[in-house]
Length: 190
Image 1 (tube, rainbow, N blue to C red):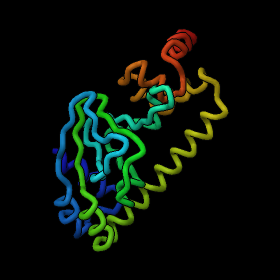
Image 2: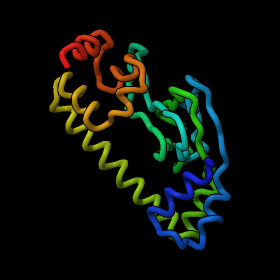
Image 3: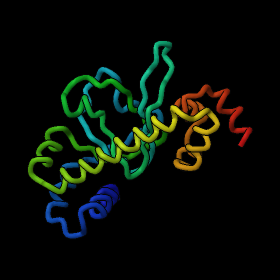
Image 4: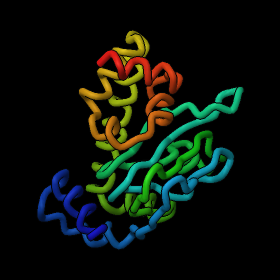
């Protein structure tokens, strides 16, 4: 079941007749995380790149007062890696935590690099993932800078409705750059 999700994801991007597909899939191992389980802690090494099969992972940092500042939530059929740590073998600068029971397929750094060198289709998918991730991050940052709190909440409901219905108010507030109290007040205006 888990491998089938990744198989379908790859086939939609490189075609149905990829002769290297089974070689790629063989390099991923299934891992399950419980709700609130920390997957990566700031300062640790990121040893894996993940394909999320089921669940949701929060990507966050702490501000000077120890408050969580959420950069992203990664959900089904999406990829997650702490890019700098994973690619450059340096300590992570962010945290990853499962916000609900989560199943991923993980590939380690060695196998990831080997596939990048040996399987052109894998490198092609990786480039697509990076381009999409960059575009989404820039869009979110640029739009959030210009929006007030209510507009950010409306954007979330319009563009990421699955997040709006499955995350706690505290997590949503962190993602939107709001206090939980402000988020509660803004929800009443919808």
